[in-house]
Image (tube, rainbow, N blue to C red; front, side, top):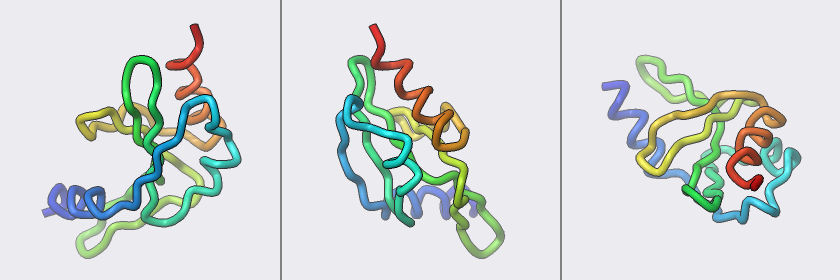
Length: 94
């Protein structure tokens, strides 16, 4: 049941596409509720959103922790805004 709640929540997120070169720590911190940034890098598209906690009856978004999802929806990183930004930048540096 929790997996289904998680999937339903993810499917209803408002997505905004951003270029990795325009992404900032401040933009990650200002991520709204039920919002997901889709960040294109040279190798993969990554989703950035608030970390979710699933309870028996609801889905709760963290206020200061973020997750990075790969193109298949798997969580590949969890951190604060600065750590998340640094992780994404690792995909864009040559």
